[in-house]
Amino acid sequence: SLNHVLFNLVLLEPDYDQPQTVKNHFEILRCFDHMAGQFSDQTIENLLHQCKHNHEKDRMKAVIILTHLTTSSQVFVDNYATKFITLLKVMIVMEQGLKMKKLLVKAIVGLVYRNCITTPEHFLMVEFIIKHCGYEGLPNASKYEMSDLHDTCKSSLILMCN
Image (cartoon, rainbow, N blue to C red; front, side, top):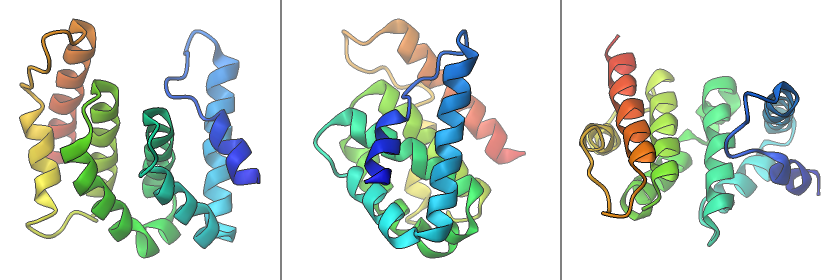
């Protein structure tokens, strides 16, 4: 299906030294935006299902796309943000990878920006960001990835407070 083909083209980390790959990545996200408007049930339900997938890369791609839809699609915010929040509350507890944690922070910021984080139980997600400002991680964790996660969390808190 078209959803599957486009999903596989999403990049986990676009290489900004290669502008064409970055352009393609964002064009794919725009395609998902259009598809979410036209075929919202099929497109978004499939992405939400991918968040439960066994492969971390698939979960990461799904979070990237759903975060994009959070900031770009009113249809998504109106009809699916609650389901995304429910999944994120599980993911912030279960996910161990530093790159995934960074993506979860970005997803939470997008939801805060769109005023979807409103109840006290939703604020557990903001607490997730606060805790990861000083998160030490596992002993074998990459120092660069740890520093990147800390910086992302700190910047996100500043952004949400402004």
